[in-house]
Structures are given as structure tokens and as C-alpha cells.
Length: 477
Image 1 (spheres, helix red, strand yellow):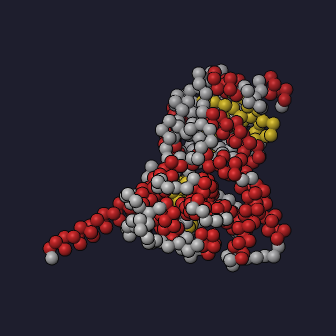
Image 2 (cartoon, one colour):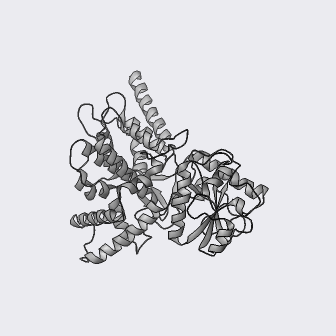
Image 3 (cartoon, helix red, strand yellow):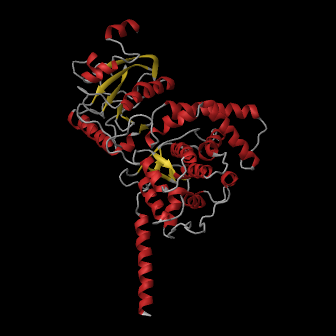
């Protein structure tokens, strides 16, 4: 009897301990991968398809649209070497991580923070992975785009009169130990996290449909896609999270996406999940306009890590609104920090250090730059598009100050960082009306007595299409 009592107590204590641990896990992609590893178990555990189907049973219970394409999931599949090692104490944590919803007006659940600083809705990601695994097993699945992104876009476009059409992004309460994600504005039905998860679901689903998993586990695929890269992101196209926009753009264009969204809405109408207005032309116009905004926001513009994500201090005083559009982009290097930042953690630390220096030593109101380019594949928001910076003395009202983290006297920034600034950030500013179409690139040294942006970087920007000497710029403008 004593042995039985002790055994029961050990089980209960283990249950309570596990529950306490899970209650305080950060809502990060790393935590989710650990949960997947726990479900996979050891040795010849369940297949990746079985694992992802069991997770779908939590995230999309009773969803007719999902079941139309993927069938009814069995949250506890049976069969030899197939039953997931599902710890009951995981259920609540999995619900919180996987089931997407907006709580109140601002709190977004079912999302996790990736190591690259972007936020991902897990449900959309998992649907794409499941569709890809099913196709890789030889079964026909036609709903990869519908399941991951097209349905959410279509519903958001239809309801845009009641909410904003896309986004927004948001901020975590603590990027080191994320638990609460708060949206930065009124929610649409296609938040940035849903779009990120949808893109990732498409990309991984496409990959898995032609590279079926045999010996690999789902956790391994996720870790490869979302993992840290100690030497910085690799150059060239790779199937990794920080390249999701580039990779997604290679798969679809605006016209293809428009047809996918219309097809998803038609399926929803057949299932009775969306109202059939009978006005096909009007619906097509709504979707066309929505897709154009999607392409601009997510495929033409770069990801810009917002101030709250890098831990910015408040602006001191009141910022000054710029008179837009501006006609110049001024290129800087930070010099200090001298080394490129290669990860979200390193870049955010550098951003905070620069802001402290600018505010506490130089006594400026804020970090001086409009935007900062890291070598982690992302742009970081400084003062942004609308507010006057403190970057190029005598010219702060005329142009934006763009800094590359590092000292580029003798070397160049990562090619990816150069492309983000030269192509994506610039075209995004022009299309949004922040920047004139015939804007001019200048190096900091052309306007102020300084060696900035370093000799190597200055030689690089001299080759850029809209670079001009000061004399050329004066004649042009």
C-alpha cells in the first residue's frame, strides 16, 4: 500500500512540476520545437504527418474549410509506432501556442516569437506542413495556398469595411521571455503573424511535397528553418525564415494570388462559411485591390523591426513631422558599433546602445537615424518615415538617414543588407509616398566633413542608380 501511495504521489508531483514548467515557458518558436520533440518521443516515434495532424486537432477543431481539404484529424491517432507521446499536461500550453484568436482588441494568441525577431501564427504554418506531407505521401492536395494564406486574405478583404485590411504587427512584452503579444493597432483578419505563418506554411509545404520526410523528424525541419545562424544569415537563396518574403515572391505574383483568393472565397461560399453576394465583378474588384496592398506591404517592402521590438526608449519631447515626400536618402555607417550585427539579439542590443549614446551623450531626443540595416537580414526602425531625424547636419528635413551597423572603411556590409536598402526600402518609400520617385542617394561625407559612411561603402553607393554628386544633384533638382 505504501508503495502504491508513493507512486501516486510521484506521478502527481511530476504532473504539477510539468504544469508549472509549461506555464512559464516563453511563447517562442524554440519552445514550440521542444514541445514537438516531446510529442515525437524517442526512437521510432510517430511520423511527422501524425504529429502535425495531432496538433491540427487542437488548432482547427470542427473547421469545415480545413477538413474539406485535409479530412477529419484524429487528435490521438493509433497504430504501431504512430501514437504520439502526448502528455496531458501539454494540452493547455499547445492550445495557447497553436489556436489563433484575438482577445479583446489587441492581444493576439496562437503566435510565437522566432529567433529572427518576427512573429509567426503556428496554425497557418502547420496546415501548410500537413498539406505538403500529404502530397509527399502521394495523396492529392489542392489547398496548400487556400489553407495557409488565401482564405485569411479573402476574409480580411471582405471585412475591410469593419477593420483595417491587413496587419498590423505588434510587440511582445519581453523579447527575451515572450508571453504576451499586443497588436499595434486595430486587428484585421490577416495580421502580420498570420501572414508570416501562411508564407512559411506555403514554403515548407512546397518543400515537403517534393522532399518527403523519412528519417527526419518535424522538429528537425522546424529547427533548420527557424534556427539561429551563428555566422550570420547565409548569402543567396535558402529555405530559412528571414528569406520568407523573397522566397514567397518567387512562387506567386499578384495575379496568381488574386485567383487563389477568389478560389478560396468560392470554396467558403460552397461550404456555407461565407455569404454569396452574387456580385462577382464587385468581389473581384475588392480582391484585386486587397492583393495590390498585400503585394506592396509584404512582397515589395522589407520587414522593418518596430521600435518596441528592439526595446527603444521613449522619444524625449515631441517629434517633428516631416513635410513629405522627401528627395534624398543619406547613407551612413555606425562606426560604433564597429562589427556587423548578425542576429536579432545582437542587432537589438546595438540599437539600444546607439540610442543610449545619442540621448545620453549627444543629448539628442532619440536615436538619430531614420532606419538602421543589420546584417541579420532585417531593417530596424529608428525615427521612421514620418519624423525628422538627427543624422545629417543641415539636411535632416530633406532626406532620410540610413545607417549600416558596422565600420565599412575597408569592407562592405552583407550583400543582403545592401539589397534591402538599395532595392526594397527605397522602392517601398517611393510607392508609399514617403520618397520622391527621382530621389537621390548621397553618402554622409558629401554633406558633412566626415569619413562616414567609410571608404568601401562610399565606393559601393557611387555605383547605385540614383547616386549623384552634389553638383549633379543641384542641377537635377
